[in-house]
Length: 345
Image (cartoon, rainbow, N blue to C red):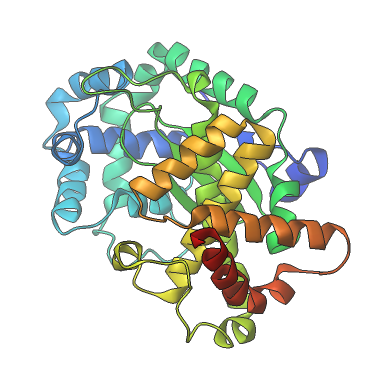
């Protein structure tokens, strides 16, 4: 069974600048709790998709525990609209296996939930179950470690947000949620929890190794958003100077899903750096595929314009024209406007 004890961010960053791929039993515990709720059925109603054999088998393993207090509490929260992300953020701050909290618990947490979670973990013999299913989990870890072995996301992100002090952690999740990637900050770590790549219809998901570009996309989307959100807060004066004007490339359909300037900026930023990374580090084909998806599905039709502007910043940053992205941000609206006009000619 893989230990859930997090490595020291300082010690880890001194040894390597690679993304740390690991399992965490607190993450797997919450995934198992979700398996015992109606979340799997609800997610299928939102988006029909096949799930990993381990996820389906976990539901069978837990069939006698769907009325457990830990599950009842989770179900009540889901019914109130609480996103699964909150469950993971809460659990990853607990000790393991005691599941005790050193910090005050969020107000939404049900009374004694950590005790119910510990009882659920013990009564369902999850440690035994995970040991039985270890080949599935270890295969996922191995595939993702191979995926991130030869890329340095720390160095890639540094021109935009400065030196990344946090440790970047990536966790495969072959249980639930099976249809969404979760990104969150836990202490000195930025954590991404990703399900296997969804296949077509009811087909089983692809192995992680079959679509490494999706792992890069997920990592940059989540790490990029967390880091840029903090960066904008640190440079609130710069943001205030331009946030009263809409971003020139944002159209109504995209803005409807991201009503605030802040959200739009981060969305355009992470899409731009993702396309740029894929083109430079994976292939032009992967970059085009991602760009087309963002244009047709997410309605960010002017993404190529944004990518060209971000690439121009990188070139100027490397030549010494800019010392930081904060110096470039005030120029972004005009450059995007000009780029959009040129592309329309």
